[in-house]
Length: 90
Ligand code: SF4
Image 1 (cartoon, rainbow, N blue to C red):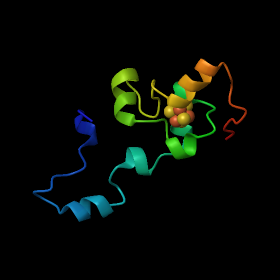
Image 2: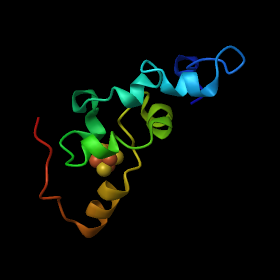
Image 3: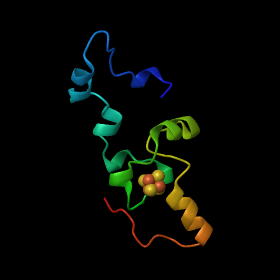
Image 4: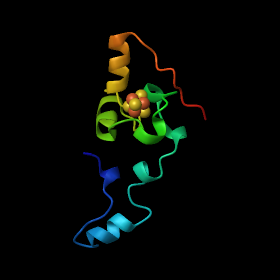
């Protein structure tokens, strides 16, 4: 994602399958919990599935993970001037 904090390993040092199967790899995605969601996605019913949209977009546009500024659901709701009746409750 253009940021060294997301480098999981080096395939010249470990096999891809070892990197992929490592439970400590990709923590930002695999260890996601709804409490990590940021303001753009707060209260969204789809948080557990969506995890705040594309993290690459989110990080580059807002400086935060799990906080995308380009959510099609939100755009459609705004366009149709409706609010989702479903909200996420912790
Ligand atoms: S990107 Fe949209 S659908 Fe996904 S969690 Fe955020 S608000 Fe919900």
